Image 1 (cartoon, one colour):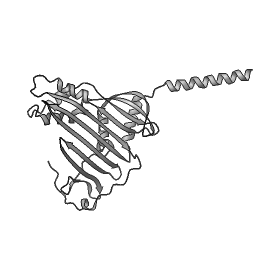
Image 2 (cartoon, helix red, strand yellow):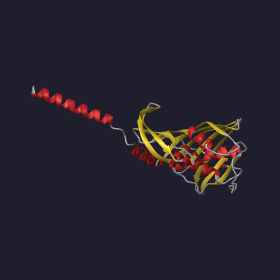
Image 3 (cartoon, one colour):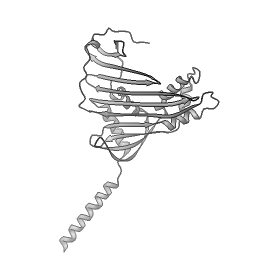
Image 4 (cartoon, helix red, strand yellow):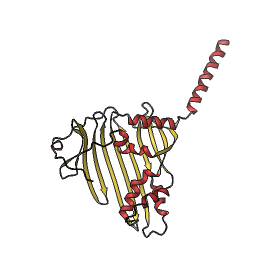
Length: 273
């Protein structure tokens, strides 16, 4: 009888411990802090970046879409980037390489008219500086744990992120430039950003590696409110879509970056500016 009671007590204790562990949420602050550190220590990876902005200005619709993919390697530093852009009805594509050789760091680009080579000696080479979607981490100001979920059959922590308004700078600049708003004012973008509401998105951290594997930002409501709050403007802007997302994949097993022979043979040109 005593043995039976002891077994029942042990089972109950194990069950209580299990329930306690299940009810305890992971610490979002710790997860994101470590994920950012891990991201900046990536030796090689592949990454994607997708952004879409759709708005109307005085009834005329404008569409801006970007789809980019890159391969990153830290030592020696190298980056291959392929980008496709849609501006209205005009589609463009480009490919570029940034590579290190005994003479320094060089940027090779081809937008369809042949390869050009320029010095990139002062460029930042860390993942947070070079990978488009990871640049968003610099604008994160807060995080809250949501739940465990799965991405591509891998268990991940889903974390709600709060972003500083600076994450919207390029979007606001695009709309201001496209509409002619502000008539060349150098302060209008900053003024609009100072009136921005809270901006939210999601980050996904791999449970087993602690690596940030995906970021999502839907700023449609926030950007729309920025432009709806302008008083006295002759340009009425309505934003119907403003989303950004990206994935980090092939961490530690990205393909090699090989500079094409015709790019390697390009003549060096002086960087603009």
